[in-house]
Image (cartoon, rainbow, N blue to C red; front, side):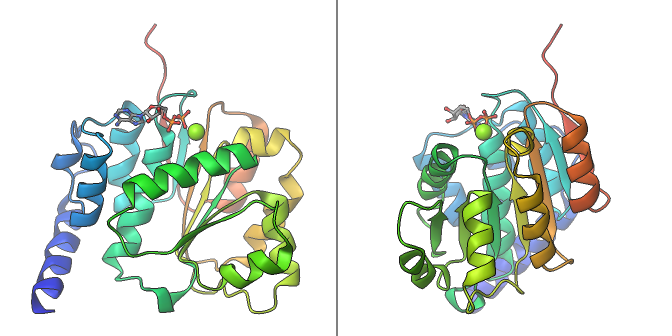
Length: 236
Ligand code: ADP
Ligand code: MG
């Protein structure tokens, strides 16, 4: 117990002292918890990609992030590592309810994110679930209340927010919108607005997309607070 408290305090201090401009090369250079470090190692992730080294330190420090980098640049870990860490440092437990919500445009992408989360999060004790339809609403409802981290598609999530009475979202710490350009292109703008309206105002928000479009900047203006812009461009 005492050791746990000391470890958390140390980690918190290291994150506060972390210089987000120092170009972090490897995950072992970051102030990360034991469970995340072990999960990354077991998944053979050692070196950070560009978008990860630019956004993870800022996100660990609680900043809102507007990130743009092409497909294949490693955006998934850029938000999953901070999600795990920021909940861990807050000593999030099963009794604290939903801590992080990750919105993805399609079921397939949501499943991919969930699989990466299961891999790198395997040594954490958080509960994580998918809300993408394909089961009965009631079946999903029963599991929802017990989840700390959810990966969802916009339509299905909104359906739960409207219909699941016991759905507790007041504690939410982090919102992630992945592939925000696709979310907008697929016509989920209204659904996402409605979801964001249900969420506590005081939260950390990360928005990632492959392209920077007008619709994405509109969404960013509505959902992010004083964001850090993190863009990775291909070398010319
Ligand atoms: P994006 O969301 O930007 O399209 P992904 O997060 O799906 O990119 O990652 C693309 C590929 O790169 C995946 O196969 C993933 O496992 C791999 N990858 C991501 N980050 C790293 C890393 N730090 N080291 C090695 N491979 C990585
Ligand atoms: Mg992606």
